[in-house]
Length: 304
View 1 (cartoon, rainbow, N blue to C red):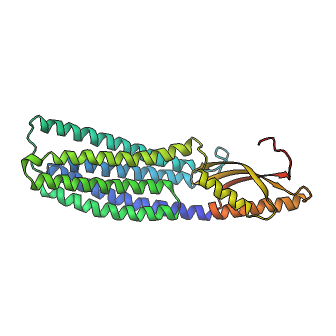
View 2: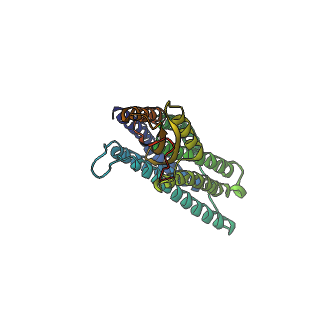
View 3: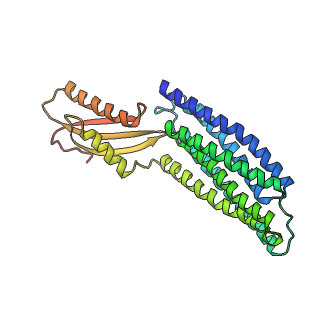
């Protein structure tokens, strides 16, 4: 439990830091977009606001994840973290669609002759600041996310990276519209459109991984082979088979049948099972849910 609390505390800390930075950046970008006459910067500000919202979602989810198993959740509350990742991905998708819609609408207006004012230099400064700050925040959060093995934190880190990419496109779009004259003002909304596709790609990657977990997809074939190899390395194990896997939040559920020599005592067979569980927990964390079923050697297993 202590390990899980440390993990949750680190997740909260890194998310609260991102939360504070997102508030400042959102205000800065909206100010720069409005007073700098930049559609791309306003779109970027909306993206930063969505980061602010997803930070709240992640913080709330980790309050629940830290709760121990109870009578309504025998396996703990780990899937709330997966749900948070899915919400982050869904929010990103909606943001991407919204930016795409606004950008295309603006481009059509320009094509049909609407005069677009030159973006202000303040929008360029805001885009440059956002790139630096968001990339630093991404690097920080993704390192922590990998350290504590949290999909929600890594998903949120990618949300920051998508904001940095958004600001890169925004910088080029605003720069082109600012320095190249009237004919190139279309670069500002065009940058917003490019940003939207990058955001939607990241949203798909995050969302699909979370959906697979919520739909009880098994671990991949490489991961299953790794499990088999760990189990085969334990003395006394014969013919591990009928492996079934899934995820509960951040931790795997592993259900495996093994055979042992028929002449072993119950205690000896039990010791082998404990060693199998120990080796798997070394690989997948103490909180992993592991079921090891013991069959006598050469007995036909009805589940095979």
